[in-house]
Amino acid sequence: MKTNRINNIMWFAAILLLFGCNDDFLERVPLDSVSDATFWSTESDLEVYNNNFYNLARNDDNVPIMMGHYDGFNSHRFGIWYLDEASDNITAQHSRHNRYRSLRAGIHVTPDGPQWYGYKGWNFVRSLNIGLKNYDLANVSEEIKDKYRAEARLFRGWFYADKVSKFGDITWIDQELSTDSEELFSARTPRSEVMANVLADINFATQNLPEAWGDGGNHGRLNRWAALLIKSRICLFEGTWQKYHGGSNSEMWLTEAANAAKELIENGPYSLYSTGDPEHDYNAYHRQLDLDGNPEVILWRKYDPGQYTNHVMSYWRGYNGGATKSMVEDYLCTDGLPITLSNEYQGDAQIEDVFVNRDPRLRQTVLHPEDREFYNFGNSADFTYPRVTGMVGGAKSATGYHIIKVYDVEAAYRSYNTSWTPAITLRLGEALLNYAEAVAELGTITQTDLDITINALRDRVAMPHLDIDNVPVDPRYTGDGISPLIAEIRRERRVELFMEGFRYDDLRRWKQGSKLQKKDLGLLWDDAAESRYEGATVKTAVDPDSGKTYIDPYGGSDWENPQFDEDKHYLWPIPLSEISQNPDLGQNPNW
Image 1 (tube, rainbow, N blue to C red):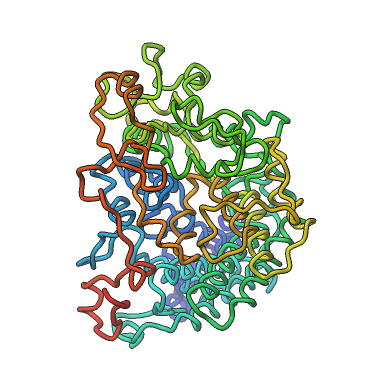
Image 2: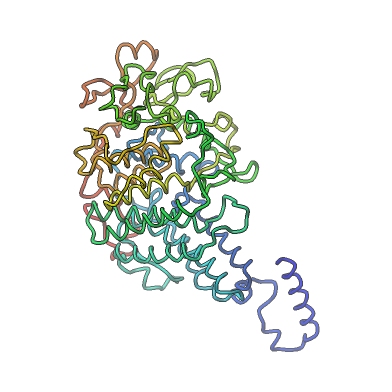
């Protein structure tokens, strides 16, 4: 293609010499500048233009859809791992993460301007719409044009679905605007209309994106299978939102989610990563540096030494406060029963007991004291773990539950911004969970559905199957207004997708904000713990359910007593700066 371009330029140069006095020719577009008349010509042009979308989407704050790790200094702030800090999964222990802590505690306020992951990124939409306006100019087949249209429309639908999930009604823009465009000063488009447009965009993408881009399965470009997973994610969110928050089209959205996920599961070229080692397979690939060729990973963000790097693991080492007691207690025992029902549960008198007879994913997510050497946790054998706030030396955790699911000791201690820790954006495991949940919500789930989804994930870690005719009834979830089967599917989702950025949005779409009213707690704190964790300066609180005392990671802080306002916290507020420019935007309820 490049050679053709050079030949064309040489040919035009010859024509210029031959017809140098032709005034008509001299009025033609200059060859040394790029314009709509010269750029939108070949497939290469369309590909180069669409590459720009991926570059813009690397800004996880402005375009929070293909979440990875921000490069450089902002590796400390924006990224997929941190999103769970807004939920009851993990805690944060640095002021740079106050935004996550404020969301978690329900003390966020209407901002003056756009905040993290918020009401911004509109330059991305503009770029998409410019492309969609100009693809027709290319001298290529409609099939080729549709391939790049599909890529742009997938991005647009994905972007808008994220905005709707946070703000509800949002202004739909599907054309290039100028500073005088009326749309800039219009009221927000109703949620139902926006989501209808989103569905049209992602349907076009699933029908026109190639199954592969001819790049040998490289990690970097969205293919049809990725579009199906994105569709299932978006439709599951909207379907459950409508079911639990009110809406007339829940069944349609859940059906779309189920169908998209099932097509990917049955026909896609992906499979769960497994080497037959249930004690390590779950977290093994989350700690790999190169995921090309991994059978489960559909899309991941790659970083290259000296080219595009991050510092996320080093920041993660010091800024995350550890997993919560709530998270740890949700892992089943090895008999397939929750800790509330199983005779195998050994209690939490000491941290080692917590891991006995439990789902192997727990030990591959939270550091067992005996695994310090295996992970080289803390990069030193001088200290025992866990280590909690106030102890001298080593890495500390605010809860005592150190996270090792993604731990890479070399990246954790590498010099500033020299790491290439990857981020998994899309993987097959999510599709299995999306499908199981969608058909369960529809009331059509079968044992076969469970076997190809929940039980396939359990097979990887040698856990007992979920039997549709013998579902355990965990008393902790009987008040959630859902069936025991849906409760178990939600538990599986929480466990499997821990620290992959889903929990906060899941609680919002399920209308389970009440779970964010409960304190985050850590290790049991009694005389034995005080003796074992010498020098600790932790705050404590009594668990109202058990009456026992635990570490209170947010004790004495602004986030000590979390709240959740059912009348407003499911949506985020529109920034005051946006309303001042366009009062017709209005504000979300009770903000």
